[in-house]
Image (cartoon, rainbow, N blue to C red; front, side, top):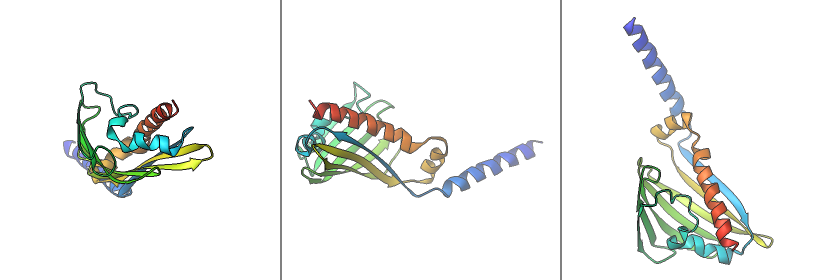
Length: 175
């Protein structure tokens, strides 16, 4: 009887792993918001990590250690953090900056799990008297992420954070 139960468990695990392996090798998360402010007013809030404190959705740990290095803003600006299990440990660097339309970054998550290097892009596009701000992130989906994705909707989870951050950015920019 034990052998049959063990065999059933092995078959179920194999089916889950095979199904997960069939999922895409990359992911894309993207959210947008229209802000009643010019791109020139919004851009500095994204292009300077010091300004992120006003709107980032990831300040979930009041004791989080933050380190700023490299350029003060724009290309070469670097921000690293280490906090509780909600924020983990990682760093982000601005890799390209096209005022006032685009900021490209490289996000490296270290904890709670190694997340590789993920490109992140903020795009600012005129929308009449307002600006449409789009926050997007791409990355590789390794087998572990694919298996997690069977039980957790990563787009929804990360997308909710993007929505919160964009709403806060809107509030700050529209002051």
